[in-house]
Length: 147
Length: 200
Image 1 (cartoon, chains in turn blue, purple):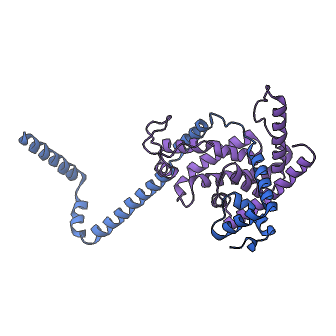
Image 2: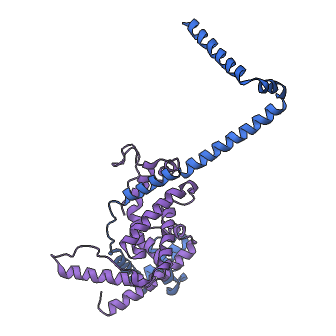
């Protein structure tokens, strides 16, 4: 690659990304090649480095040691007030799933099992309670027999 | 800026139950509601975010308040974070938006700088020269439009790549290259004037 494939104007435009190591491939090679043979552009690169170095010398105050504590206190407070986004999403999905299953079950029982469902619906509350109690009694008796 | 090492198999001093890991893993844990993981993210990025916001808004109280708001917002929006960019650039973008909004509302006269470090009593001349350099740099940064300033601060002080700056500012890499070229040219003009006057 010829050293004169780029002129000084083009190279000066590329000095900041060259210094920031943002150039790649042929452009970087051409820029480096021009700089190797051009004292004026090399001087410009050094001046740019010096000015950027000056910027880097300026510090900032220390962050408060309580910033993390304050952030986490607010996060916990907001979490108490409203569940975390994912928990909310999970809750919504769970609720949607329950609704979908209920609807599906309703459709299933409402069509194929309508005849078996009807007698249960017709049973009185006392009969239902009695059935549950007797089932429980049978279960306890079975467990006692096992001992 | 200080960041925890990303080596595995170690633990974080403040939270021994959280192993040292990368941001992406911490984000995934935090997305399931793991507060210790989110706290570690806050701990890692507090200095960098505060420093960036301080250089942007030029007031420590405002910078700290914005850093806090940005981090709480990050927690609230974490469920929607898909990892297309890094957590750092995503967090800084939230901070940038807060900062640009604040700067739009405030007049420049309200902005002030705070003392960086205690004066060096041993070498008063060196301390004075350093103070002059700091003032010159601040003045040079003050002259920049906010997008140029943000790009320059992220590049010089946060050591971000052009791609990361582009993610943070919501611009293309090409636009960032152009912003940085103009920012550096403008800053250098101001510094050259101060040099010619013998200020620095």
